Figure 1 (cartoon, rainbow, N blue to C red):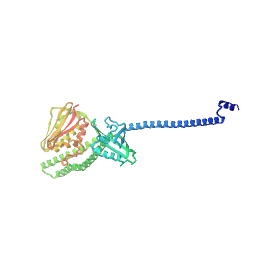
Figure 2: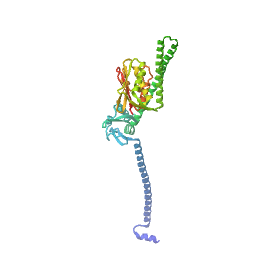
Figure 3: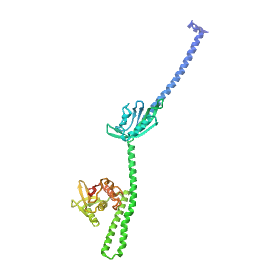
Amino acid sequence: MAISILLVSSSDSLPVFWLWITGGFAFVLLVFNIFRLLRRGKQLGRELKAIELVKHNNVEYEFVLKAMKIAIWRYDSKTRAFVYENDFREGADSYVPENGEKYFDTLAYISPADKDRVSAAFSDICEGRTDVYHQEYQVLNKKTDTSYWEESYATVVERDDNGKPTQIVGTSMRVDDRKDMEASLIQARNKAEESDRLKTAFLANMGHEIRTPLNAIVGFADLLPVVQSEEDRAQLITEIQNNNRKLLQIIDGLVSMSKIEAGAKNLLMARIDLNQILQQMVDTYQPTTNVTLKAECPMDHLEVRSDRDRLLEIIDNLVQNAVKFTTEGAITLGYEVEGNQVRVLVSDTGKGIAEKDQQRIWERFVKVDEFIPGTGLGLSVVKSQVENLGGQVGVDSALGAGSVFWFTLPLE
């Protein structure tokens, strides 16, 4: 009763009833505002979490782009212009169109060999004929006068009311390393296929190469008991010896190549008189050929430190090769001292070698002339053995002008 009197006395014009109604309404409004603020606070909290999530995703997105070394670009079909948003590609010479640069301007930087294909594929996605674009091509950087390989993917992200693409987003990345690897694999595959073909031809030829001297040895040996003339017997013995030597040369070539394949590189280094080695070769092969063999040594005495057996095998194979391809003239063995190394020369007046074949003759099983007996291993053995001794090999030749085969050896 005292409270009512106090309220009535505080406001003569406001009835108590309306005062209660107003207070109740204000309380409800206050509670409503509190709940609304709480809901707004929760919504703000969710929005802040979403912002943090977007920020976090952007960091991850950028990290992925950097890790994959990718460039992101957009293309507007209406303006026909490119915009590069991010570019994490490696290489300072990567071509980046200016923002707003037209499509036809960018085509000028694509290799002529790829331009038509890339242009047709990009037109297909721009016209809506396909939804995905994927191309590999070479880019020509006119500023640095270099080129590199690039791979691009793209897809449609926006269309107009008619379904025509209006916005295309794509990625580009450099693939030079992959292209180099592909080229190396293709080269290795081709080389393996060629090696397999040559080995097949070698095995087919080997039966003939071994059978020919073996038949001669067996046939002449069978004739010896029935031949009475000492001159004829001497001739048969000479032929048997010659064919024995040919057969041993074939077997030696196979054994040498087997050792090289197995990686046998143990060298017995010693001081060797090169003049003596060359003269020994002349004395060995002169009786087996009608051409003149001679050793022209510019010094009375020259010692090299090398493996005697390997050195003999190298010169032996070179002399054999010269004898096979020289029917008239002379074969000359010699050397030239060049600083701390010696260049050993085996020159002939034979048929010579075409320039296009002067590199491949050092490969295994390669025979430039199939009508000349041989296994195609001799020069390959020479190259491998010389390299094991720390030297190099080469040939100077022309068709019809003879050949000069050479190899180098360190003097010490």
